[in-house]
Length: 618
Image 1 (cartoon, rainbow, N blue to C red):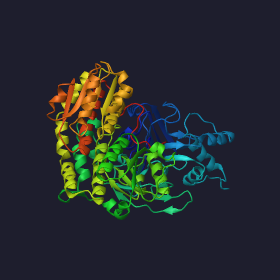
Image 2: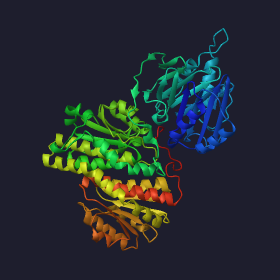
Image 3: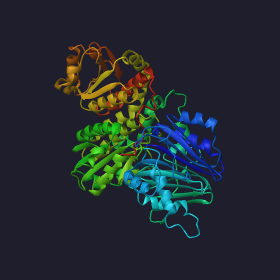
Image 4: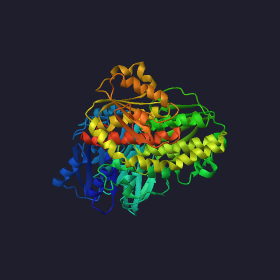
């Protein structure tokens, strides 16, 4: 979840590294650091806390040079301190490493290295890497007295490492070289010009310099020098990786005048739906044209069960997909937390379709679950935002969400795009399994109209701002919904927790009287999702149960519903749409409510405490 960056070329490296770290700060913000080579001199600066702390320190201690590496940290091993910040060094202060991932056997490696005289100064797992590379430099040293090339020592060191890593490594002994490597953590190489390269965890850090990138794969080791780049394996085999042109603009990763990325991305959701639908929705025929799935149409027609695998917000989108697919495609569906999936013994075979949902396409738990599903012979389908990501490459087929870069840690537009794609997959599989033309056209027509209805919801955002000012004083909330809106109730609670740090719980409305209602009083508000759908009367009954006990209620209702308005303390309206698509409209007021509560409370909206955007460690 950390961000790493390295640059080699002819430009002043410090501003390039700092700009790259700024663009990756959503990946972690516990501490940050740089190591820069200037001739044979290594300059290092590391600071605890936000990137601004490092920037302030660099105003006093500039690091000149044209080769360097940088790191922004989300702490796993060791507290976020100056000492534990990356880069980490060997005993001689010659080799410096920045690392994204976890070294699982670091205890054993540390003990072995201590026995050989190495001294450790930090609490991190990463520190074993520069010492291990240093040890490989010494072993079997050529008789002439000079050390092995850095890339050879790195290759030998990594052969002993268990775990996940994205690495960039410098040595003052070879000042015009960066060695980088990947196993289980994302890494992208940007080709700026001959002899000028940027390597990073995230393409957003590369975009200011080039759109020509190489997606580094597991087991790859990069050697970057002014003479060019080379990609090899741990077995010293030379590889040839394809260059890809990134198709989005760097301005998409800017705030564009909004106070926070989260608000900008909430406001971009109509566009996100349009982008996810573009070229895929054939309204007149009531079908979805999904190129990746079309190639597997025959195998998909034989599927007799679907398992959806995801984490966090993507998991809640998957739960909505479960309702969609069961109701309209007639398929039995299970939704699984990726973090639990491979520790069970799931029953699946070649007639099982496994849909994996991940914004980044690099989520460690989801990737591990995908590989387990492939081992068991299931057909794997990806719903991924980042083109060229590991999950996108490893699935049998898939559908890109095309949401564009999402920078705020709390997911909004990526979730909306996932819901859109799940609706398209439902239409695709439903029509394949006997869904009528009339039903298909109705779903397609309503999907087409969702962006306009989202714009209507967003035009009323000032109401959510006012509600937040009224309700942010409370410290506990329930979010309640039924059927398609039960998952969105959990998503609403998650958003409030993530960005405002207020305690919130999402429940199926009908479960309230089975225990949770004991907590209801006038200091415990409930946000109840009560649109006019097939469970409207049931939700109204639950609403009345809470009201009878003195509970404070915010209701989300369908436009024109005066009945609900008369029963509650506050109401938020959304336009009418198909029940299966209502989650796409209902989630937006909850996102805005969470956002405005966080603003009222003075929270760090885009970078909430303890969280990072892309979870690339288990």
